[in-house]
Length: 412
Ligand SMILES: *Cc1c(COP(=O)(O)O)cnc(C)c1O
Image (cartoon, rainbow, N blue to C red; front, top):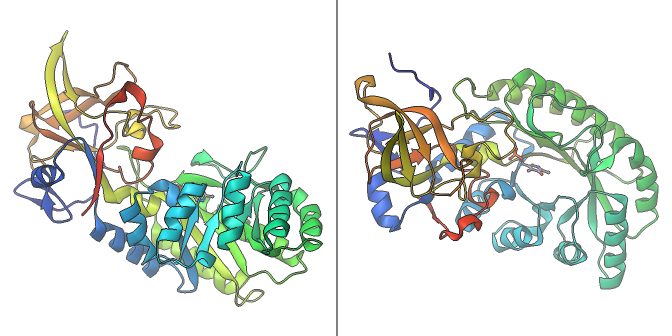
């Protein structure tokens, strides 16, 4: 028996054992792209994912795409036509979002440490500024006065609860994100006296959660908090952003989230809690990874195959400088293997399999993409495909490390 370390693999179409991306065999795609390594994002999968979310979620819930998960312009353009809103986290992402047909009123700008320049961009373009602190609130007010426009702001609230099970916790306890829930009343009084439009509230408690029960409870508590804050606000609340945090499976033991259960919960929260008090508010679910993560692959070519003291190493032309998350260095506590395959051998049987180390081309032992991973025998020039590479891939990686060229990204 071959030890199988990669049992989770997203469903991609194949033809003659070869992986199809956007209907194109991966080796043909590599020829089309002209170089390896590269990232390929599948347009059909993006659309299907959004359709799946729409089918599960209430029709009056607005779906926002968190651009930082994958800011490739073609991806953002495509998604801008099928989601209701875009969330950005920098001045450059804001320009990218403004390049799409998405109306500026449906763009929100979150993230700590926004500069005066970024805040000015945000006020000038009329997007919703998710205020991360009192200082930021005062800066936004000042900019509004200076340029003669009323800033549209929402308060990002650091909740008075924590969500367990998130890959990255971003709310609860002491945080750099948002205004502590107990400090919101004082900030509300300040904003009410100022020349700003306070549109509502935003709570984002954490990212990459695969535990359905915990997510349902977090949604319940988030809605509790949002409604408490709305109740304490004198101005009419037109915007409630309930965050997201829906995770995707990466590792052998991960199971996909129960999206239907999440959808039923949101239906109930809308019907029983939110709509009776705020019938017309924009209620937003904000997702990055869940929309794009499973729609992308990172394709890299084997450049060397060597045996060292009994272990076989496949050395590929990519690595952690492009896809750091797959090396286990993007916030993971324990290093595990991301799903991967030999691009033209997805139908290989266990007899062809061997256990190998897949390493990138950087001069560091951290550049480990597959540790004791079972794959069909691969040789020099074979394409190795890393799945779940659509989110927090290229732009979340140390691309300048070792000064290799940047990989191409394509949407097919
Ligand atoms: C990063 C981020 C997201 C997206 O998180 P995912 O886990 O990719 O869905 C959403 N909202 C805010 C405020 C973020 O910072």
